[in-house]
Length: 171
Image (cartoon, rainbow, N blue to C red):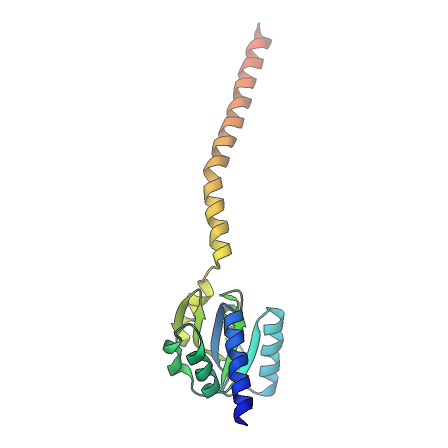
């Protein structure tokens, strides 16, 4: 590969790193064409961008990035696929699903501004909630007391109305 081609690939990787807030490094060693094709299809369906890359080029892209990706340098061995996503836990769920069929394993991930290194982090990554999901939960929790008060007031009004109606009919 020519030096200028390598430079272009490093620049493209740098742009993709800026574009997506989350990415996973996956060990694609030993995946045959059928498994790779299946994984690409599932990634496409989940709106995940999958890129197979040379470790040295990815390392250089990490070095040129604004963030310090040094915790991930040790994971750049073997065959590496990168899964770029806008939803932090989508690739984790996909990897968990593919693991049943002997699919790829997690090397590391950068999700919700944190580093997760090792295959044992997959469960933690699956449980991550996006900022939108957390905000929705907070709004629901804040609305809950107000709904309870309104419900109590409405049921109390019906009770008072029933008592007054009964008293009025009794006379």
